[in-house]
Length: 331
Image (cartoon, rainbow, N blue to C red; front, side, top):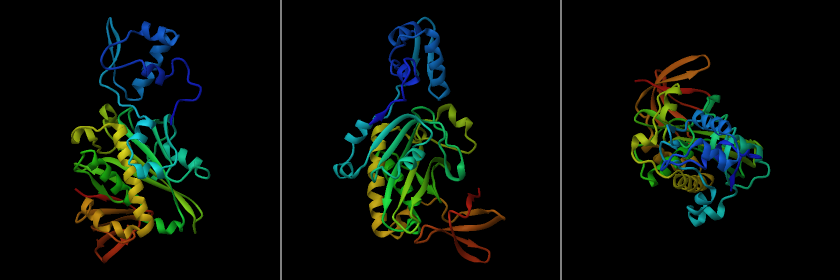
């Protein structure tokens, strides 16, 4: 279901947004009359929407107009777009207007939520990536989706899950006609040597099993001016070609995660090593392995059957674990 903001006010941002479109401008007076509020209240919510990254034009004498059509998420449309097998297995599927993060929400629900429950959000106040980094996403300009997955075995058996999730995202994008996407170990989606998205996997439950994982996916679709505020090189799907419908992409992503996680649960990461090699943008590149006590230089040689990165150092090849290090590719 699509979850509205709690006790939405008459002039809340989503209610004001519902009155706007790209085809025609609507005056502040008309908006105020429709919503039963003052023009000042409308202006305040318009400014909040702009602060969220939405391009709203103000045209003298005619009013407010969206600079481009807005593709909002819809839980019913996503469910309707799923393959029957995925639709049967899926738990809850919620779309929130605003939330701290989709992964945090599923972690809070983890004790009671059904397996393969999914949460999406239009806005995240505390979206995050690996090592606590903030994740920025303009309103309507990205995809923030998390899935809860339950496993009977121990947490140790989930090594490589973030890489499998990355492959699922690459597959989903390809099904929507978006090609040229690679994977940078351990959790980045990249294109044109810039970051397109990221994966964050958080575990819970019993270390010896059963346990659960919340897989969080963030994708850049149309960054606009938000790109300038991000402290690393980024790219969006719009730069790669036509941007697919967000609801269609969400459906393909849910399907792909569901299918790949089933394979992972049966066979482990070893079943994905060859596929990962086809998407691996680090293979053969000189990298810096950043540890707590310094930097070690080596050549990336792919991943092993556990999903650890194989690196040829000066003293020989060793595998490094994603929990121990960060990796920076050298130019």
